[in-house]
Length: 456
Image 1 (spheres, rainbow, N blue to C red):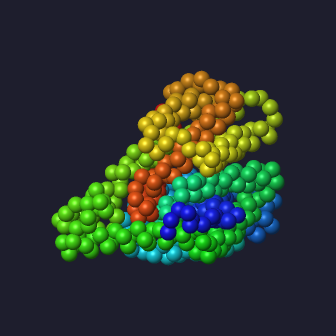
Image 2 (image 1 turned 60 degrees about the horizontal axis):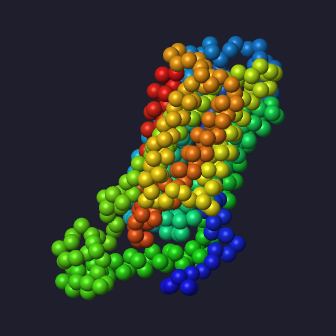
Image 3 (image 1 turned 45 degrees about the vertical axis):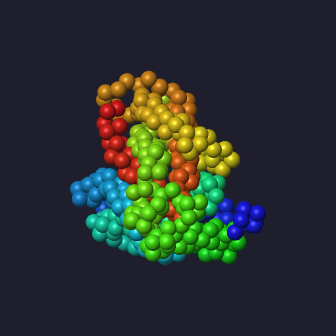
């Protein structure tokens, strides 16, 4: 199969499908995070009534004994966010690592389609439980189990997707990253609309979960349509041909029939080269992509370390109505971050600088450390140690825009270049390893977020 016979991606169908796969990977979990207030409110409610009962008794509840009178349930509410982060990050990191080593033994369709169906079932159960009365402790435990399941399935799904897209041209990593960025934008808009409508938390949460189910179903349909597209089949065939060629050489070597010098690969010289095998060497691949792996890990360590743990604690300084106070964090923090993060991810579809071997890329990644003092010196409240240097709201919005754009752009570059640093037959493994380091950055960021918040 030569380049002259390379098919075209008609109507950008494959590009759009990978965009949808990226959106479907993160949108459900983002909706879950947006519904955090629903979970904590339900834990605070001493009666733990269902949505319908709570709505009918709204006036009675207003004069009832506050939920704080129940120490156990209020304590569950207080630790909900910390336990949720722990239950999300640990399975995410573990199963992404597991996928990096075991993805070759499990069929791709099982890893992607199976996990999409599993996540769909979890969200259907979550939507049903909105209508079911339940005590605080069982509700808390079931919610944490669901969080662990969603992130376990999501880790394998995300790693498999980046491995899958590693087989395609370099520009096809951008739609996955762009789709993931747009997921955050949709979530931010949903949060603002919820505040503006004044709707019940339970009603909003139920809407989020049902929307997530619809998105997952659409994502499943998109994935099932991929094998029907000639452009996708072409690159799948290239991978198979590359694997067969490697196996043929290994068979010749094992029989003592070394290929001619002109056709021999540099890494295969004698029959005693045992480290080479039909499965790509993870150690060798990691050596080739080590700089990019470190870079994407560092990008997300800084990002999650500051957002939302520090950024969401910034208070507005502009005097005005209560409306701006209510909308300040949803607009200045979450919406600003998600818009510019999405723009940064999307830019890599048309512009990719610096190159995969350039020293500028890791330099720019490390330079993001400057955002640590810049955001810590904004009007974060409460604070004990550091002074407020950038008090005006405009400073915070400007820093957030640059912070988010650099995150989206540099992370997308790293994820795009990773599979291109290795042979085509090793691209899927390289993509899975890059996904692991991405998740490692998320986990490290969650740890550093406690430190960053403590030193303010």
